Image (cartoon, rainbow, N blue to C red; front, side, top):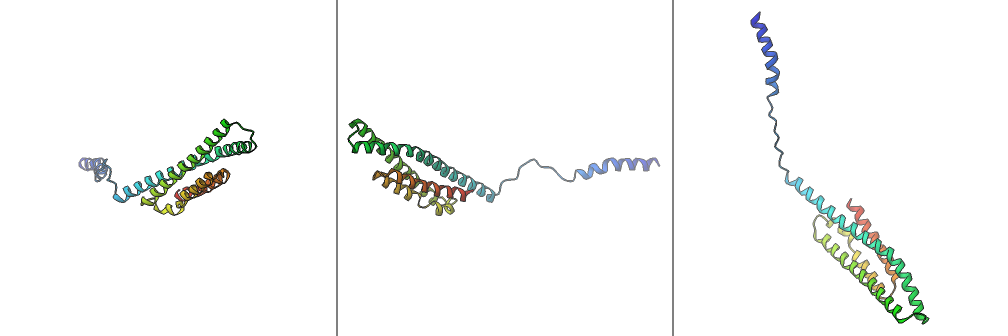
Length: 173
């Protein structure tokens, strides 16, 4: 009986402990598969592309907001120049303001050209290039309109560019 009781106690204590030790626990992490790494890289590239599009939207909207005030000031000074009610200094400042606006629009066109080229040349961003194609042409239209002193029309063309960029951003989410 002692012997049976001793065997029973031993089996009761050692049995579960022996069963629990059948699996080894490992703390080492499994290496990432190449598919997971490629998906992560693709996501990072897409996020970077979306960030660049969002930055262009921010810059353009701020510029368009400021352009509205500048356009009304330029038009008022132009009207004063036509009536010979403005000094030559004010007319020269007005001309400089026009050149700054034209220069800024040219800068936007160049940045949008680069953005289109980058989207076309990056495999992860190529699906979104279709929606992005043409934004630089819209900025070029605004550049031509500003060159003709049609600043209001240039602002409207830039609004169309912002709309296209927003469509690209929505497609990328």
